[in-house]
Length: 82
Image 1 (cartoon, one colour):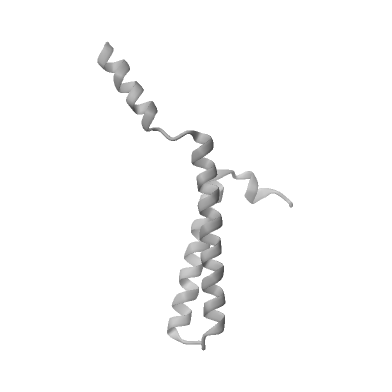
Image 2 (cartoon, helix red, strand yellow):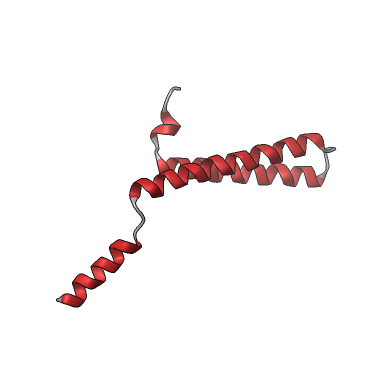
């Protein structure tokens, strides 16, 4: 019986605090968006080549990840009118 309660204590220590976990996802979302925006700026500054197209694809992937992270963090941020 004691081993089970010790195992539960260890598991609860390993689990992230939900508030901290969600706020870190929101922070990650903001960072991903910032990097994606910088990639778009770089792509627009370059001549239209295969490399600039790949840069845009990378930006698109990062924006997708940012939106997913934000949705996991708080779905209301994606559905608000503001």
